[in-house]
Length: 396
Ligand code: PMP
Picture 1: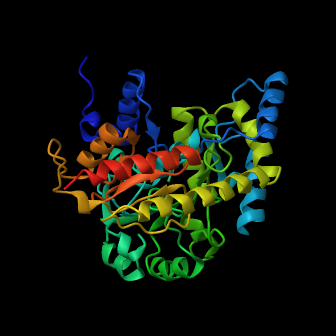
Picture 2: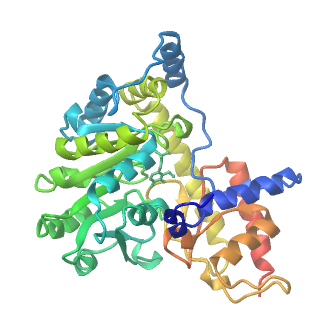
Picture 3: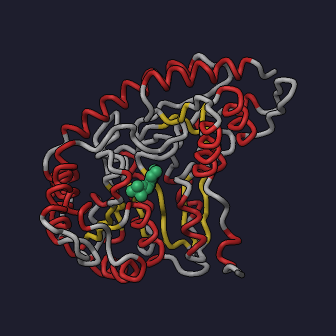
């Protein structure tokens, strides 16, 4: 078969490549510690599972409306009011097959060929790829460990051109864990107010995995509200990665456009998962906060273990469940057999020598860094970092 030229523009996902390698090594009986993973190692809370079982028994087995069941969209509105003090109507919500599809919907309806989309680095791997798929150009603003992986209003303004169509970012950020506080967002909002055509795609999937202040969204600024597309989902906050529930919140005209695209691709997401999502969103957040508390402890331990390794620069993540240390100190070093030229070599070395999975920073637009998750259990995290330390000590 001759495949379409679309595929030529995309590389295999680094995350999936590493997962495959880990799987192969495990198959050989090797004890691989997964610090590459982007999902909580918790199971979905019981009350949400019960809701899905009830939905199956009650025969919620038919197609749902394309943008999702009305009562689920109402539940999202209640959540946005309760947790974010934001006013949305159900017509402004589209439920999707994970927030990845929400991102794809948003980019497909906003970005035209030749449009520029500003993306601060480091970014979630899918962002530039989805922009490419829409034939747009990703314009990256480089941030670094020294500035806490956040961009300034001046850097934002400098990246804006007459072709800028959108700004796409996550806060809390995967992979850096950076979280923009209210004042920082307000300062960036001042820039956006001067450019009324720029759409802000705001990925808030790690909203509740926030170790500092309260979550903040660009949608709080009245002048911006109708050109912000909030992207969120239940994967991380409710340990529901496999259930595939994401959503967008934005004004009705754009929501209708996303509904149209989604109707072509999926006809809407799984009806059973949607029924369970209503319960997840409305029954309180105690299990979510319990998970965040556990992540906070794992973060503290991870930072202690990372600090114990020479040459590694690591900022403290304020959200999400990753550390993203600059490990470029090890580039150019060798253990006599393996020469480490870049993050890819270092990840492979750590996998081969320490049997720990990680993800190279290039996948997130930051080649000096490597992403390590602390969504694994504490004993596995501790064992993993002890092994990494020993492996790195052999590099000179
Ligand atoms: N955005 C970010 C920043 C993520 O880290 C992820 C998952 N790793 C997603 C979106 C996609 O999540 P899902 O499709 O499971 O909702």
